Structures are given as structure tokens and as C-alpha cells.
Length: 263
Image 1 (cartoon, rainbow, N blue to C red):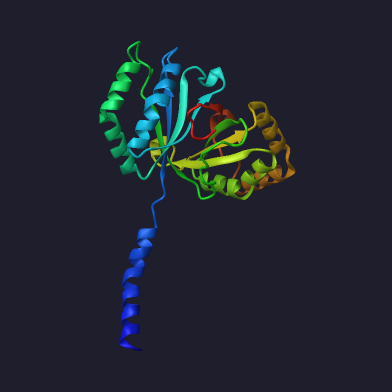
Image 2: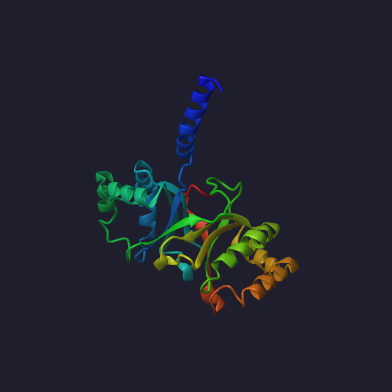
């Protein structure tokens, strides 16, 4: 081995791990936030986001992913804003929100928007999340035609979340697509008090609420789904979600706001 070859190999062994570490960018962290307004204040909140908040989020390193309002009154169609943000990390989120809160432009916009009364009825709910290994990349943009979105939250029995993931990974997602549903993103909370280890939160897109209901009816009647569900429950001692079903599986149909990056 020549001296130059030896030197090249030595340098390669030294720098390759450093280059690999530099290329391995950390996975982003997502944050689901739910705002509940005082009666009659939703339009004021949407205006504040449209005209100020979204731009200031981006200014301070927060990526706007999607903004939605429920379509049904019982889910807060006139009082609720649901949205998802992307951060580089939890630490980055904390730093970004600190800078955002101290921004004079934000302070002025907030003060002006509340001259006619306080907008929020209670502090926002925040859930930090990571994507599952089977989630599609979060695709920002228009779907090609108007869509209705559905946020579904599954709460599993103790120790059953991995089995639920396996069922979605191996069967459910493919069958959703088969029956006309679009898989948008799948997440799990990162904090124990928000459901880490027990909850799966995901968003689907449908042509309309009626189309979504019809798609789920066809999905549940599909022999492949019936077989997959029976097999997973037989292997895991029964239903994977907590009971009653209305507590274990929650669904909110939503429409995108006009300023939502996802349409």
C-alpha cells in the first residue's frame, strides 16, 4: 500500500462519519393546536391568522401545514380552529414561540384584534406529535378539487398501539385508498399526558362529508377488512381501542380555511 493510498483511507475513515452525521437531518416535529373561541369571535380569529399570525409564524421558523374549521356545529363549526404546525424540534418550537410572542408586530395585531373583546374562550390545546413510519410525507398544496378533511383519533387499550400500527401499515391504509379516501398524515403524540403510547391521530381527505361516510361504509363491509380486523383482534385478545367505540374512535369532519397551505 502506498503512502498516498494509506493517507486517503485514513482521511476517509475520519471524515465519512462526520459527513454522514451532517447529512442525517433530524425528523421534524409536528404540533396539533386547537383553539376554542368565544361566541361570535371565530371570524376575528381567522382574520388574525390570515393577516398576521401565519406570516409571523414563518418569520420565526414555524412552518404552517394546515388550518381547518369543523363542518358540524356539534364539533365547533362556529367556535373552533384546528391547525397543524411543523417545527425542527421541540427546542426549536419553544424558541420560535418565545420570539413570536415577543414580536412587536404580533403584540400590536393581537391588541387590535381584541379591541372588541377577548377572542379565545380558553387557552389553546397543544399536542406535539411525530409521524408514524407508515405515514405519507405531509403534502402541502391543493388536492386538485375541493375536499373535506377528517381528523380521526384512536385511543388504544394499554399495550395495543403497536398492534394498531401494524394493522394500519399492513391493511387499513391500502383499503382506505381502495375505497376512495386519501391518506394525508399519521401521527402519534410524544407526551404521556397527551396520549403517547396510546393514541393515533390521522387526517384523511374526502370529496365531501357524504363521500367520506359512503367510503367508510364500503370499507367496513370489505371482506379484506373484515378478515384483517378479525385476525388482529384474535391475536391481541379483542378490540384494540378502548370501549365504548365512541370513546375509542373520534372523528371530526373539517373544511380548510382559505389561508390553509393544505387545501
